[in-house]
Image (tube, rainbow, N blue to C red):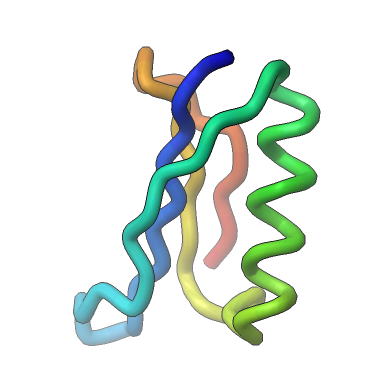
Length: 61
């Protein structure tokens, strides 16, 4: 399993969410990140999900 990092920002740069989670594949990490964003009603905020190696998995503005 690899560690992924989900971060959400307000337009002024304030961090609204900064958490990590484990997923067996990049595809599953993308699904988990999108579900977390939806659950916390943060899908419309600037967000990114990266792998522990620095690969960008999800990005939204």
